[in-house]
Image (tube, rainbow, N blue to C red; front, side, top):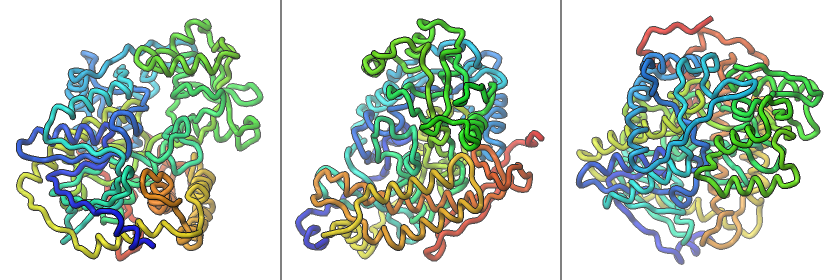
Length: 582
């Protein structure tokens, strides 16, 4: 059946100098930088409309860069290293703190709109007040919609950038140890393409959708954070690091009108963290991983709500109702995203006074991923011709990301990936991929069409259930081993029966089916890395190993060897002598 279908659809062969996979903040910025090199052609692939899909466009917009006259790069550097529990590769942090102001200034010059970050009120510190992480106030607010709008507009200025929307890369192509291109599925037409490229930049985003609750899929918008980029790199032979480091944050359970980052309801609106008995269980300042563990403990010990959550209680705020509303409008960028605020007001018509709200949240909402493909300061991986930037890469944030550094990271390292990929591509040659690898992949993709089998949604639910129950805020060796056994059973029994619904054009069920084996790969990397790291550090908390151990100041590593997943460790890059605090 698969061969017959393939004969009905044309296979398109394409060639470019630089292929960029993903057009969120990192991919868009990489394309812009690469396009500055005369004579090079840049091809950008994105799963949805550029600027209107993916996670960057949905971001609230908090960013960090040095702007205070007394602030210095070494202070910013130290804050990031401490927040990351010293697991950050320091060569990457040096680049981040040095280049962030210039990259942010460019973004604003291209049309991104910076909004004022309101001062904090009530019981909580400002998002980056001393004591809660940064030593200087560095908070800036550029909402994702205007952030991506500026990047998209700048991309359109370059005639040598070609963008394809509603497409996915399904395999990285490799020959003689080099990455030489990728295979692409056009979601609109159902056609396959082989893309030859001198250099490939992987900017495919994160993996929040491996969990039952995630801020990466608001309003039920799924499919853009499945971990596919990590699996593409893994199967090509790239090294990945710190795959156990998943950052969790509060995921709103009630009310149904989404209010953005729950932590801002405390720091900006004066709310308090309270359990179902009405008792406050967290006193700020605390890093976000500590807050989520405290909430997890309340729920585990029977002080949670019927929905399995705890509260951020705005009824105890010292602010007036009007002041709370103004803070909410500020944090949600009402000045730009007016329709979002109108929706919230319409949905909350029966509860118009925010001072009566008790925001119920679960602590196990996957939010950000610190691990990923290992890169150096030029965004080069261990594979010649492959570069990576953004959330799909590892080493920048260590064991815990400081708030506001994600949107900063993607423009700094997006630009670096574009610059150094262009430098490489100027002297590289195209290499044709092996024909047999192409035909194997085409057959695999078409093999999801079958007369009967298991629907993608059922398998996705199994993956998210086992990850949420065993690899969430708190882990144990027994739980991780149980999850690995369930995942192995899923591979043996469910994946062979995975069936895509009929039809090739704009078949999102087929896209889900393609993503699911890669989701299983990413899940296994997390589980095995979490089992291997027998300590607690940052976002990785082992109930059976609750202490942080000096001998574990090293990256976990994952690489594919002889068809199997090999787990090991590799040193952290240290450029400055900084001893972890006791």
